Length: 385
Image (cartoon, rainbow, N blue to C red; front, side):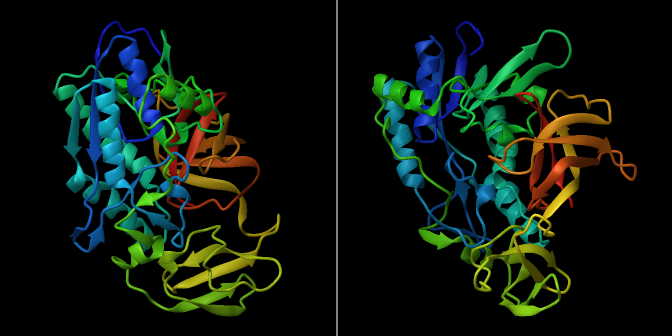
């Protein structure tokens, strides 16, 4: 954690142990810490036919859920836990209401992407628009010098050159720089990630030592919905079902589905066709014809590809590198870093082509490719194909 002197820090306390320890560490260093619980959705309320949702976990990110995942809401429990943490630390506590903004910027984005046949990443959008957008702006407006979260990441600073760097956490198994790869210099200069130098096991130990009431609280998993609901049922509140064929890559019809929008590349469960023996996976979709293509998983399968293109590129330094350049990248959270060469697309000034040394499984349009140099997160782009 950088040396700051005494500062006012607004901490996004989610109710989990990670953000609780982040707040405790900052207070122990003498900062004026203020706890904030971010209200991002309504329980029991429908808005424009959509159910408010949010991710409250560092175990099962929204981006890793398929339309057949089942999730359960824990928001009220999270709020009560956050309130108890603030009371134990004797810090001010507020609840800030971002429900309308969340529905408009995150939920509607998710629906648009699924309707277009893509697989969205609401985790990235929530971080960009809500946590490091609206929350940061309001905190600064109300007198905070910094905001802090319980993300597993570390900040660095280059005295000469590009300013702040976003670096992988000490605990590689918990590192969350993938979800922070849309951030900018202007955002990072006001951010603190106090637990980035700790292992998850050490976070638990510190939580108990600080006397935090949630030191042994189980990490919640998945996305919060109203009650218990499958992702597919949620999507059906906004996307009409439409029966279509399940086809193999050889052109054989093996079943039917109720809408290509409800499937994602690489999906195995909930396809509606097992094939017996070796499993089948979703390897492609034709949205115009409403066809879902499936294939068995093989190294030579169409489920694997060596190249992708991406747009909406963000370089954390604020400056693009000199192309072509060699780095590592991942196309999904927790994926081991893969060596690649990045070049500019000739047809567009802001698109990139990423060529990997080895074929990558289930590269999915709508998801993010995130670039690294060593342990430094360089930035990201949205996968197009």
